[in-house]
Length: 268
Ligand SMILES: NC(=O)c1ccc[n+]([C@@H]2O[C@H](COP(=O)([O-])OP(=O)(O)OC[C@H]3O[C@@H](n4cnc5c(N)ncnc54)[C@H](OP(=O)(O)O)[C@@H]3O)[C@@H](O)[C@H]2O)c1
Image (cartoon, rainbow, N blue to C red; front, side):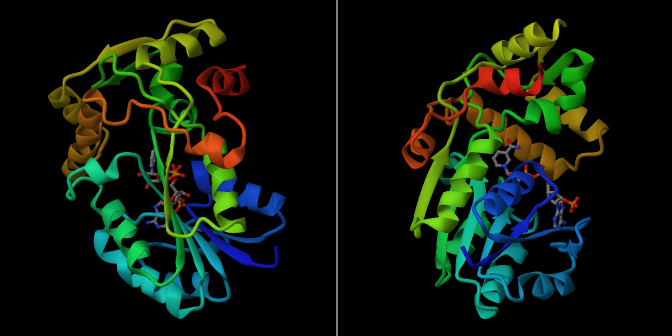
């Protein structure tokens, strides 16, 4: 591969792995984020052009502000970018437009562009238990969420990175893929599996949406973001994301990584 690819969110759960996987496939990678050597900040448009100049493709994580999506994609096109791979959320087409508005706008912008684009709509990541939002509570032995016993086919971000490489190295233009794990796992089973592996008890506390909102606000999360997250969990309780998708297996020619493998690899 002779192209240079901009990877946004390069210090995050997917971007870091997308960058590594692309390098492994022979691409030159330009990792970018607010804290990367190539500084990219959605809220500072002066950082956009330097990040885009000279690259042929870009891995995108949606901006928070929907107003940023179209101008960024237009600038990418103007700068000669030919291919965009956008990380999005499973079930976005059944999610109200005010919920994850930045993601809706990003999908609209890449679809409206004249570029080769691929949208990757992912379920909740397995790595949420170990790298981000749920990690501190899991480690403390008590995870509190507005969930019931609807299964969630958590997707391993390593699979997302492998699919992103396919999207940059093969022809997947104009395609939207649903990326999930191979089977649904309830949150109770998920914490039980991590607990069994680590020899600890991890309690799952089932919150009401109102209780969850209050917890999020106490962490400093905005009212708007709390409503978005509550909207996502409501969709999950209705089973909107519960059915496993087979796109990972079809694209990679191997099964998606299951939750037990994630637990063994991560919590060993
Ligand atoms: N977590 C899930 O289960 C899930 C499921 C489906 C879709 N998604 C979507 O995935 C995306 C997040 O991807 P991720 O989990 O790979 O990332 P992440 O682990 O949440 O990390 C966020 C990345 O974005 C960068 N960043 C934060 N604010 C920024 C800004 N203002 N401008 C530029 N970069 C910024 C961060 O680096 P710096 O701090 O250095 O800037 C970091 O690299 C979101 O759009 C989320 O909705 C998540």
